[in-house]
Length: 205
Image (spheres, rainbow, N blue to C red):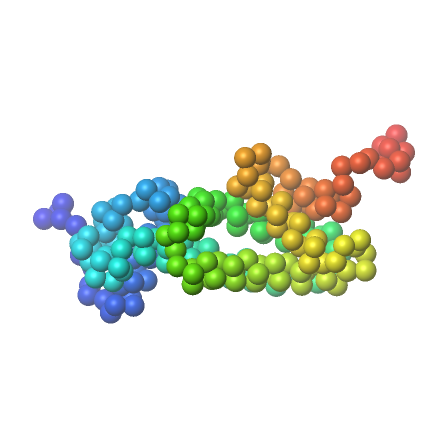
């Protein structure tokens, strides 16, 4: 009796759907697309066949789980909470740290999402939702930068795009180093560049 699978109370279809997604997300972080329906069923405390009573396929469940896990709302809320009265450098540093941390946390899921899309295993709606999430993140970052647009050589949307590109490449790219160029250091790179200015040399003497 003690070794039997833990049974959960009967749920309405939408509740069951959300319960299966909630059980799948941690497994995707651990196993990526190699997660099995047996593992998902065990984590959710249901029979394996229950999955297919709610989702058409394992792929459908995985796609829904990836989308939900990558919902940017937590990051958007964090960006919205950044004090706009802070200096530009401080605002951008806080934003860069938030975005970098979120990307690093979801690196495995982002890799899975890209594999699904490249393999044509996600429908157009899925691609559209992911594109919408990227746009919302970009727009939220633009709002952080915009109050000091006059200080920048490029418009806020270009600066925001560059910061996001760097965070993405540093997290997922072949030359990335998640422990390097994050937060204030990344912003210093974007705003100041690599070149040591003469005034910096004099100040160091």
